[in-house]
Image (spheres, rainbow, N blue to C red):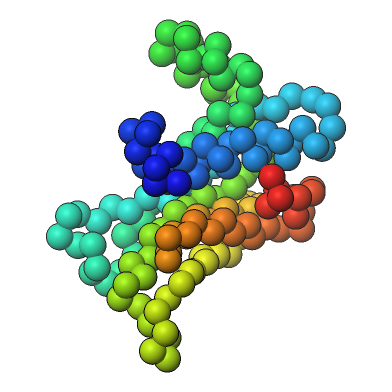
Amino acid sequence: MRQLADAWRTSVNDVCLTDLARAVRAWRRDGGPGACPDLPVLVAMSTRGPGQRYGPGNHVVGYRLLLPSSARRLAVRAAPHRGGEWAMGHVRNVVPLGVSSVTVIDEELTCLGARLTGASMFYDVHDGLLGYVSFTRAGGVVRCGVVYDAALPRAADLARH
């Protein structure tokens, strides 16, 4: 993942979000024919300053991000800014998902003397949030976790994509 991110001059988190967009598109297409609009997700973002990296407390805000999963996205990207804003305003919140990414400093964590070799993160789905996807980096591995409400049709199938 790191090599891929470096090759595209981006972050590992952006590579994970790209993979999620591709997975969501495949997952929706498995559900049958029909439109596959861009998917709005709520991405957790840290508001910590450079000197606050390990300070106590929750310093997180949510950012609404549209994961590109439609062919229409290319046309919108070429349109003038206001035209793109208007078009995106018509995308419906079809599958409200929360998404976050965390890197665990694994050299410093041990359990009964053993070095940490992996970690996974999960979150409660609530307040209309039907699913949560996490990317946890630890021990040189990125793990993807999916937590979902049973009200989200075929949610269990998302993980295999």
